[in-house]
Image (cartoon, rainbow, N blue to C red):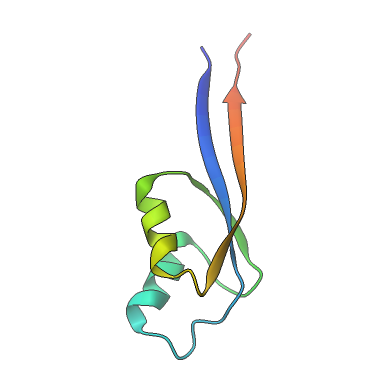
Length: 71
């Protein structure tokens, strides 16, 4: 059984200091802790929406597609 899952790598490139608390909470919800920290998350509308809320703090580094295969 093979399943295709898309994921994206998100990088924090700017500090949240000086931005509203809600934007800092979005960063921590994505799992980002510090500048240049990269996390891999499922490519879903929820994650895309969180990234769209803070485009001035994060960038999408790459899109990864993984295929699981069992023998």
